[in-house]
Length: 123
Image: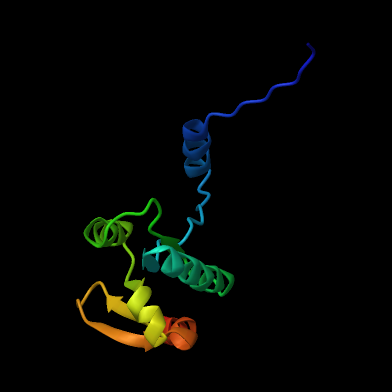
């Protein structure tokens, strides 16, 4: 079968760019990490992550149904400043838990205002 191929070594490209003095704009590190506890929370936090990304905030999500402890380890490894944690009870109360991963402080925030709250904290 006829075909066309093309390849480029990424490592060599990066070395050539550095040799030419080209500065690479790297993607932002994760700023917000969402931790859902349950399927309803997964759907709700997916909406929050989507809104944050549209606002230019680097946000990630705990995938794979990890438990709280493993999901929070993933949040810490991601380098995120904030974690948004929600479970069924939180959503029933109309809140999510917003945790500052640097200070360890955690407080409930109204679900409807979590995106604007994070944008305000971001500066």
